[in-house]
Image (cartoon, rainbow, N blue to C red; front, top):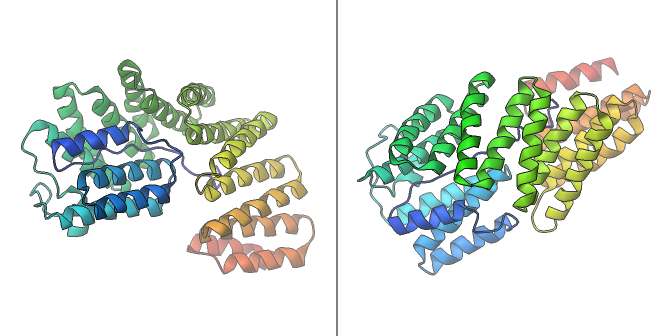
Length: 374
């Protein structure tokens, strides 16, 4: 697995809501009533316009949709924007905070302050909101605790979708802790639940995540079966962004198995979808990842000149997206390739540029080692 590769796990959120009408609106947003191709900035603008027009429930539902879509695209900036918007609106409406989590600082409590858990339904939503909050913060132990509590409530209330989401959250929390064996059973059960409930969108998400876990466990044949099933469902749902993610993961599996032509076909198909998707929203980072993956195939098949071309294209996309650490990695790889070709002056230039973009000591040590060799 390359440093450029994203861990393409997908997390689904159910946030708490201040009143039954808003809960219904949020669940409608979670069910993807807004198309996945909706531009993130347009959603953000729509939410604030609704807030300015005093359409509070609609604004909160729009920001929930923004959160869901941003999470699927792994766009941290818009995830923060959505959470902060919900916090601001709830605070402005003077909803009273719940005493369920007194140790949370106010900035973390804000998205949950709108909830008064007076019945079991709202209690389930609070627990899931807390679980997803801690999942996003990489606090896996707390996330697991809340997901397990929420799962018990969902089972009692026979809410299949919420049961599946809780199990998927449990599986992903174990995976973040690298307990891959413990991830399998919850994700498999979630897949079956979504199949039973007829929710093909979440079923595809669960299958995709299960494929990643099987990949990490070295079960490549099973991983491909999971990805192929997810891809079929996503094609049926016309989830183009999901297709791109799954095709990219399939390419990684085939590349690891040294089936390079099939891997290249997967990456090129994903790149085509990414560019189509990019006509409506910013996918520079995703395109850079795919270009980098194709470049790595060039390296592994002894085609350094081809690899250089794709790395340069990836670098152009990454610099446009202002992702400094990824720029450093690409500059480092370009330096390494030129070094292997005997172009030492060019290699040194790339290493020096990479040094200027390092954000971690590990990145710095790796590049300094190469500079010393040159």
